[in-house]
Image (cartoon, rainbow, N blue to C red; front, side, top):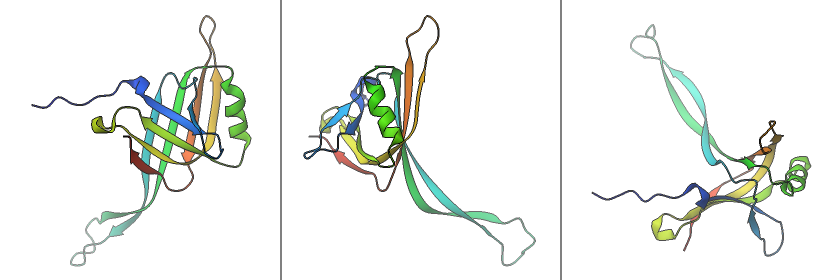
Amino acid sequence: MAQAKTVRGTKILVKIGDGGSPEAFTHNCSFNGARSLQFSAQTNDTNVPDCDDPDLIAWVEREKVSLSAQIQGAGTYNTPDGELFFDYMKSPDGKNVRFVIDVAGANGGCYWFGEFLATEFSISGDRGQKGECQVTLLSNGEVDRADLP
């Protein structure tokens, strides 16, 4: 029996590019809680009738027509990150982002990368608790994957 290769949650990083040349990617401190990457496919649905008995209930056939990715980052709010996230929200432009599994490539280390638009930035707080923030990024075009060394 082979034991699963796992990764600590702190080794899953959301790195946002600075647009420089060469581009530097930074994991913002506010992403110190939950981090997630979700892929989804949009489909077209067609009801396909039975040719021998058109009165039967038709089965739906689906065809994938597009793919999308969403990254979410959340955690205890690091106040210096606020300016970056707010400027990112106000901008019509995307940024290059990497979603990194930060372990050796032989153990499954890799990253997904592409341009992402900031679509949500929220800050919240409760009395007696530290402030929290959440950022949602949606892909703007193709997302690809590369192995880490």
